[in-house]
Amino acid sequence: MLGPLEGVLVLDLSRIMAGPFCSMILGDLGAEVIKVERPGSGDDTRAWGPPFIGGESTYYLSINRNKKSITVNLKSTKGIEIIKEMVKRSDILLENFAPGTMEKYGLAYDTLSKINPGLIFCSITGYGPDGPYKNRTGYDLVASAVGGLMSITGEEGGPPVKVGIAITDVVTGLFAHGAVLAALHARQKSGRGQRIDVSLLEAQVAALINAASGYLNSGKVPIRLGTAHESIVPYEAFKTKDKYIIIAAGNDKIFASLCEVLGIPELAHDPRFSTNAQRVANRKELIPILHAGTVKKTADDWVRIFEENGIPSGPINDVKGVFEDPQVLHRGMLLEMRHPTAGKIRIAGIPVKYSDTKAEARLHPPLLGEHTDEILKKYLGYDDRAIEQLRKEKVI
Image 1 (tube, rainbow, N blue to C red):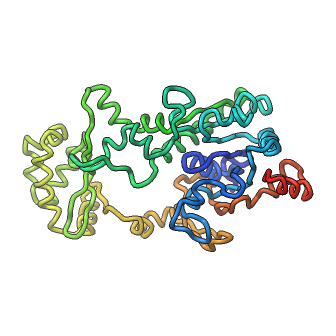
Image 2 (cartoon, rainbow, N blue to C red):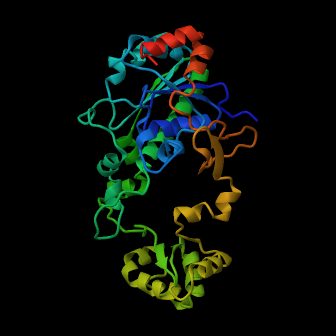
Image 3 (cartoon, helix red, strand yellow):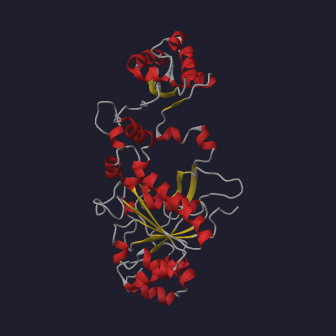
């Protein structure tokens, strides 16, 4: 089966995380993604290690499958000409340079849209192309701080903590991918492309969801609560005889079932705890009582018992445990691919499945410039002599 984006050509000038994560999703869905990199060094994440395998960082390998790599010197006139010629054939261009950089290269949207009126031009920045922060360098860690995420992440009373992955970059990439697909749909009606601006800061602010809404409508500033939830109790980690598990009692019925299996059924009728609002108000009294029950059995025992009684729960897996989890494996979330230098590599799978089309990992994360000759011949009609001359001139 062909992917749902079969026939769509993406010219990806982005690097590091948010842009490449977006273009990987588009590639998973069948688009042909041409990753444009600096000659000699390429995407910054190629050097982000250890760990390395076969000369490639595992960071780079995680977000660059289903792409073809070409190297182009954007500081050369001929390099810019190559990009402009590719734009004529492209549906989507992704870039995450600092504001003003594409204009400096002569690759501004206004210029490229004249070359290709159907071009969808997606810019990802740290803080947007205008405003007082527009010239700040965009990094996930900083955006997650400025955007409020770190203020609500960590143990109560403790220091702010970053999320274990670059989640602000990931969320931004997801917003960008959705925006690009919407623009493709709009182009079917209008025949024209458009410019899309996505920033790490705006994506992070949008991702505050209920934390933002709670503050904006009540004036109460959310605080760090560890694994606990500001508005649902109990909804957090509990210690068992051997390790921690998560219990998520999202309504009064589930809470009553939890009390029953813990051997304290009367707690569900205690006026301090009988409704969620009361449990939130009295969480400091309730949680130690529940902990006293959960420490009596192992995590596996409790997960089995809770499942039998309709109580949402699960172990807090480390990453090793994730990729040994039977449901994760059953759903194909562990993929193996062959790589030219690393041999067999294993990566996280594709989280969406289609009934009539197919999202799949077709291409290994490319070596730097691996497909330069192929792309220049296929799309621009260059011959071997012309390509060799470009290399001598350090254009590619």
